[in-house]
Image (cartoon, rainbow, N blue to C red; front, side, top):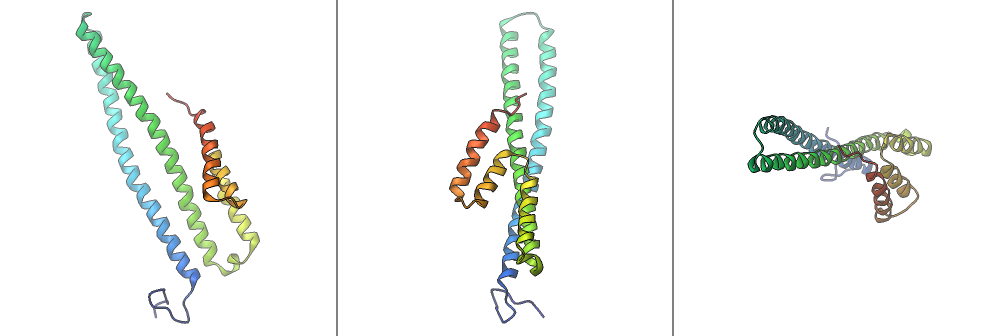
Length: 178
């Protein structure tokens, strides 16, 4: 016999079961999009690696030529291309940070699903505190911790984002550009 759902509710219908379904959908969406993003970034990374190798070969060839305006211009273009590659590598660092954050979201949603599915844990404040501590403990970026703490303190989403953004600005100053 099929379980009751919101399309055909009966006496067995449960808002908890409906919540679990929606949380599971959210996890699927996040993880699916992360997978697609990973594939794209892998392709881009391989392309940039090839470009760097070709730029090094072009530079070596240009260095063998006699000095000329054309050689100087070509070397200048090579340098500009190398600079753009470095800028792209920095963008990949921010993408990696996004992936890490989305991974935390998916993990938290999975954990919330497990908590809500378990009546013993659902109504136990100690279990909720333990789960919240686990979530916060996974965060590696200070801005994530600041946002999490703000929400648990009852701040609005807008306030939490503002606080995290201020923290992000400080963290960005610490990002190493290579």
